[in-house]
Image (cartoon, rainbow, N blue to C red; front, side, top):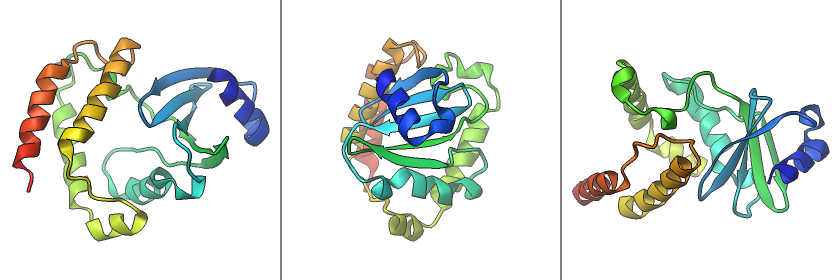
Length: 178
């Protein structure tokens, strides 16, 4: 809750205390708040040690290797047994808010370049950082669909999202995987 985030800021990040908090989004894994629209704090929904959280290690390795900016965590802590991490908010608009990708003519090319770079990275290095292979695209896509429906219901994602259409595509793709 907003009150818990304010409590964390007062206790662990006093330089960010008493700032404006805005809920950016929430899903099955995290709840994310903006602090003064400059910092982003992501709070895990599940208990874990902050030092075991993969995202900060992984993004620190990925950021200099990718053609688009990604978050690089500068704050890491725990609150009530759950990790949280913070980073400077990236410029631009969330892709979840795009209603008509045709209005953004370079989006497909830039996203393709990003994914090509990401997929060209050495998987052994990613594995050494704690990334595990997950071949169950159907299960993953169901969680992603649920997260997108929550985002659409709260006005965070474009309302044009059609879970039935996307579910069929993801199921078809998963059947093509080795």
